[in-house]
Image 1 (cartoon, rainbow, N blue to C red):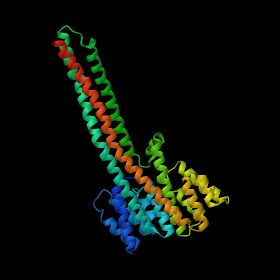
Image 2 (cartoon, rainbow, N blue to C red):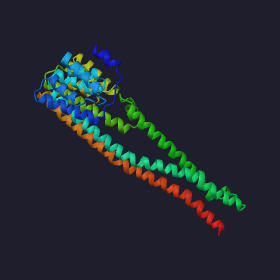
Image 3 (spheres, rainbow, N blue to C red):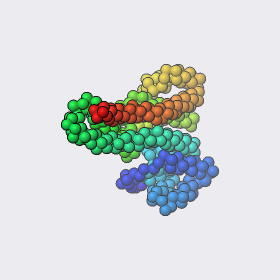
Image 4 (cartoon, helix red, strand yellow):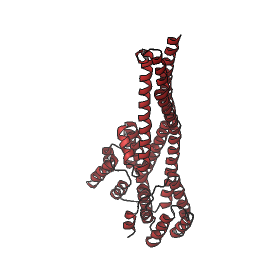
Amino acid sequence: MAQQQARRLKKVRVSAEELSVICQQIAMILRAGLPLYDGIDALSSNYRGTSLAYRFRLLRKSVLETGSLYRGLSSAGMFPDYMAEMVLIGERSGELDTVMENLYLHYQREACIRRSIHTAVAYPLIIIAIMTVLIAVLVTSVLPVFEDVFSGMGINALQNPWISAGVSAGKMILVVSCIFVFLSLVVLLLIRMNQDGRFRRFLFTIFPSFRYLEEQINAGRFASVLAMLFRDGFPLDESLRLIGRIVNPGSIADKIAACLYNVENHMPFQDAIEKMHLFKPLHIRMIQVGVQAGQTEAVMAKIAEIYENEADEKLAHFVSIIEPTLVAIMTVVIGAILLAVLLPLLSLMRAMA
């Protein structure tokens, strides 16, 4: 009944900052030894009178009826599928507090990345929008005035190569700027509205470096969850089935399905992992040694740490180059604008001298 109600509910957007706070509070509740329902009841009371109050009432009701945080998150209709599926793994493995702590760190990192990207993109985008307005005024109002002055002097302004080039350059830059601003706004809007991440994954298919980054993130998640499940004694095939539910649709899900198929057909774990082509050759050798030494869990945890650190470094590098790249583009565009305006003016002054 709760799941049917959840399907009828329209999902609301909860920011990464809010999700990180919620996960941190649930982790503290669990580690304090409070009963789950009492903790969720206390958490729900903090959101009374807010836009999320009704969703938290659904969460509290479902947890009371089922005793499952996973079912509560699913019925509330405001939490990401990844968060709910990770909670399910935490409940089955008996490490729900650890999972909630990891989710807190995950969403906190995601919130920091989004703030950095927004800060790096917003300022140049505003400047480009202002520049577009200025170009429009120059091309549609200022340059025609000079053309009228030339016409009054019996001179066809557009026959002057400098003036003609200036007008053409101004119009071209105006069109390009308008297109850039429009596309930027559309992309930002689609990313914000698309909750399931399909549009983001579409962008990753266009930009291979972004796709490689997502593959690193998925590899880190895969290794981290697998290490946790191994630590709690989950069978390999069941672990792979659980992990297959938390990853995004696409190549990583297909790789996990193929790995599960190979394992079910009695292929050794290290060979099935190698055929996934998910990890680098060095890390494949680490897994092979770990399996032989009986330290598979520790090796997978170490690989997860390596991939998560690499992903963080690449994201930080990407954010750090956004602003200087856009500033460099802005410098070129502004230089073109100055030439488009100053050259016709210089030509006018030369003609009038």
